[in-house]
Amino acid sequence: MTIDNYDYHVDSSDDQEGGDPTTYVAFFLNWAITRCLLSPDLENSRAEELAAVRAGSATAKDFLERICDGKLLEINLQKDVAQFAKAHYQKHYINNFNAHFSLTDENCYTVRQSTENMNAIGEMLDKHLAEYLLRQGLTLIQVQTPPTEQKPGSAT
Image (cartoon, rainbow, N blue to C red; front, top):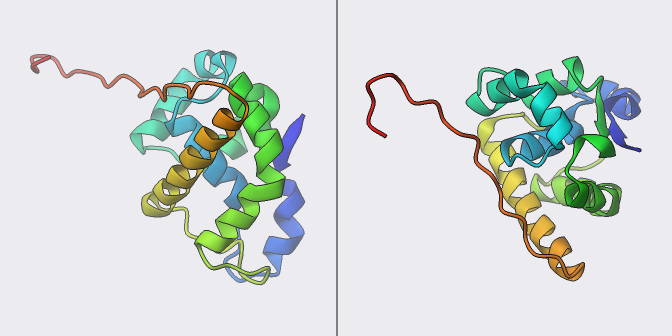
């Protein structure tokens, strides 16, 4: 199932100066990538590309466009995260995103995809995922941090 597709947003974003149709999808995908909430299949098959996003040498927008064909798919998320996305994304995420940045329909695609903005939305999604899982009677999953590479000769 497709949760969102930036193609859905192209016409609306074209009406906004500096509008980017990937805005909503890229922010959500960045959260899933940086929190290691993607499916094991995607994590394994695209480890190098995901590492680049996590290291900051590529963006979630790059990954969305090149690897995901512009789509946020249920199959690319861990099971509980996919259920959260299906329940939360269209009904709450977009409205919460717009409210966080004080956006309207006239400027909702103009948010800069900066680290600061991505982190703010990531924190919002962390909170909403935790609340969702508790309502479902599930234990909060442990957010994994990708391993960092040690440089030769550095202390462990």
